[in-house]
Length: 248
Image 1: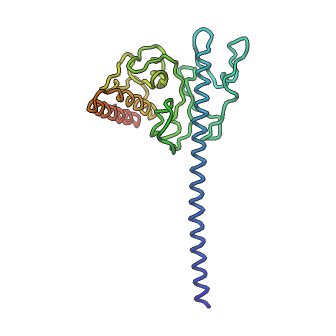
Image 2: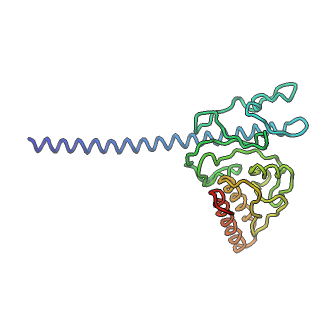
Image 3: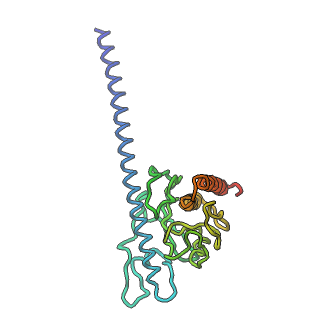
């Protein structure tokens, strides 16, 4: 009788342990699903902010300007009839608060980003405008920036708009992709010029790498393409070293 009770007790412990493992696994799957859904929300909302900032900028009466606060996107009072580019200032799905980080040039807002330092689950297969989000270390590296159409691409980085973006550490995503090169530098199959005069942050390094690899795709031979990609990797490693506090 005692032996039977002992086996029953051990069996009960095993069942409880297995149930605990199963519930933990279910919880992990649920947590991952929730996080992926929030990532999709962040990409959508970030894109909405970028589009709204672009409409505000491109629709400027006279000299083009970016908004000075996010509320300007709700009510653009620069016109006799108020224009609206967003219905509301969205909450950051990663923090649940409207505590967006702002990418500023002076007192003007070029873009927004989540202030969450959590590591993203999604690390590939982004749209072109978010190509530099690949392998980001934190959601705060996902920067939703608007760059004026016609800013530099594929070897032309001398336009004023691109110079402004370079000073702000912001990539350009129009007319062919990001350009984070020195103004006036040209792109070639051997690889674009290294970044200079910019704040080195991981997201900037990722943006430059994405653009550089696109430039490498124009190489005429496999060997030239390989050399280009090796040069890009070296620049990326140097950039990340600088971002971590090393020297470039």
